Image (cartoon, rainbow, N blue to C red):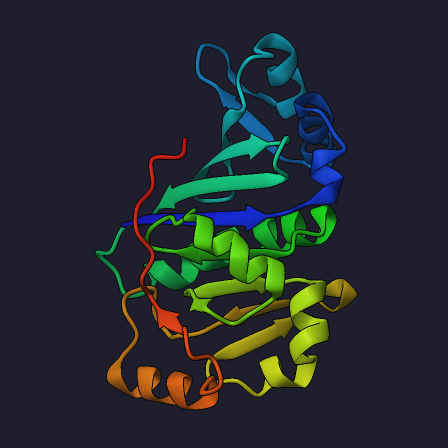
Length: 210
């Protein structure tokens, strides 16, 4: 199953060039597949290929393809896992979430998500800028603006599961599985977020933004 994610609006990333961002990931222990010669540090890779901003990073059990867009303070990723075992989704998330928790905290993104598809519609930036609750993905990362506007307890008490990250960011999982929410989950989410007239659940669409 293909899984996608987006992280939006990092002032820190915008203040860096690609080599500096690659160096930060390298210093945190993340490496990169250089297909001719094996696995190398991201900083070595960007020195060798300064024109490339798309990397394949091996985690413990899965590879993640990551695109860094310093100009927009924006990051895109894709990965996949087998659906042949009921345990695979949980193992996949155990592998990915520490990586993306760190990225979100270190770069102080305003919003991010993990879901089955990727969505970078212009409307995404509008609700992120205003910190409105308009689109809930499978896993949602919520930065300072969302926490200040809606408060930590609001997210912690929401249906699903909220995890408080350092600096008061929240990782909020809106449904039990990455597939579309069950009818019961939809009912609970719409009831809880009833003040969000534009709320949409699991309506991401695949985007060719690589």
